[in-house]
Image (cartoon, rainbow, N blue to C red; front, side, top):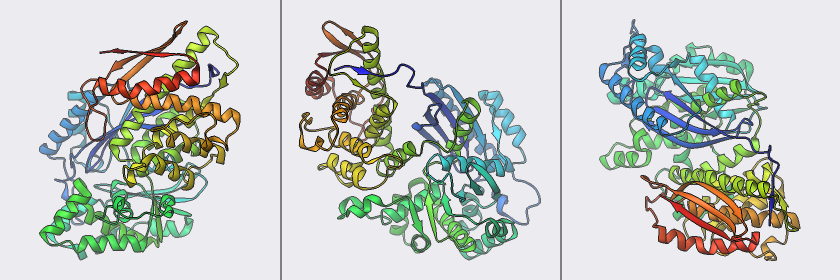
Length: 555
C-alpha cells in the first residue's frame, strides 16, 4: 500500500519556550506549535524559587515603601534560570520569551536584580504590568477552552497577586491586578493563625477596587480559573480530596465530567482545609497537594471570597495560563494569519488528554507523537521519491495526521481507571464522553478505534469493529494503526528516525535514546524486549503495505 500526501500540506512546527518568573515558582514551557496555532507541550519545568517569601510588605496596608528581593531569593532565582538555560541549550528552540510578574514588578531593587540576571545569564526579561499579565492569562485560557465567542471572567491566583480579566473574542474588555497572592497571604496571615483577618483583608482589597463595579456593568457568560491553586482545588473536588477514584466504581457519566466545580464544592474543600489541624491531617494535606500544600489554604480562602463577592456559582478550569498566553502572542507576531480563536478541535483533544493523563504519561505520549510524525512523513517521502503507487494506495492528508496525533495522545487515558483492559476504557471515554469538539461521528470513531487497537490484537480488514466505517476509512485506519503501534514501541527507547525504500522494502534507521527514561514507572526496556515487541508489528506492516520493514538501530 502507498501513502499519498500533498507535499505542501504539512507545516513545520516551531519549538518555542516561555519562562514565567512567578512569585511562588519559576516555570518554563517547551511548546511545539505550528503556524495554524496547534499547541503541544513537549515538556514543562518548575523551580520552587518562592521569590516573594521575603516580601511580606506587599500585603501590609501600612507599608509605605515597596519591598526588595532578598539576596537569598536572588540566589535561588539565578540558580533556577541557570537550570533553564542548560535545558534550552539541549533543545533546538526557535524562540524564547522570559516574563516576570508580581514579585519583580513590585520590587524596589528590580533594576539591580534584572541587571544581575542579564550580566550572569544574558537573559532579557520583560516585566509585565498587572494588566499585561492578565491579558496573557486570558490568551492562554483561549488556547485550552472553547470559549472564544463567550464573555468570560478569568481569575488567575498567583503567589503575589491575582489577575482578573473580562474578555471576548480574543479582546480584553477590562483587566485588573490586585495584590492578593497565596504566598503573600500565607506569610502575613496564615502563618500567624489570622484566618478571619485574612478574609477581612481580602474583602477590603476587592471591594475598594473597581472590579466589582465592572463585573456588574459588563457581566460574563462563564467564569474561568487558570492558576495552579485553582487547578489543585478542582483536582481535590474531582478526586474526592484524598480518595482514589481509580478504586471506586465509575459510571459512564464520569467520562463526560468537565473541568469545573461549583461554589458548594469549593466551600467543601476550603472547610476541609480549615479543619486539618492534627499532625496526621496536615500530613494528608501535604500528601495530596504536594509542594502547594503550604499555600493552598490561603489560595482556597481567597478563591472562596472571590466567588462570594462576584457572585460566581460555577467555575471552569483551564489547564493553560500565562505561559501558553505568552506563546500565543509569539505566534501572533511571527505567523501571518494566526488566529487565536481557531483549532477548537485540537484543543479539545489536548484538554481530554491532560484530564486523564498524569504528567509523565503525557510526556511519553508527546514523545510518541513526534516519532509517529517522523515515521508518517518518512513513508510519504519514500513514496514521493520513488513514485511508488499501487492499486491499494490511500490518500492521506493533514487531517489524518491530526487523527493519528489525537489517538496517540489519548491512547492510554483509560489507565486512569486501572490497567486491566485500559485500551477498551480509552475507547469508551473517547467514544462516549462527548469530549471532542468539532469532530463528526466518523472522525471520533476513527480516533477511538485507533486508541482501542494500539495494543493486543491487530484487527483484520473485515473485523466486526470496522464494519461501520467506509472502505476508504478502513484503509486509512489500518495504515494509521500500523504507524501508531510501531511508534509506540519505538518511543520507549529511541529518538529520531530515517526511512528509505528500495527493491527489498522499507528500511527504518533509528537512534537510541540515552540518559533518561520516558516511561512513567522509570523502567527502561532492553533492546531485546523492544525487538521482541516490534516483531509482530513488522508483520502487521507487511500485511498492510505489502512490503517488508527492516529496522537498524544506531547508538
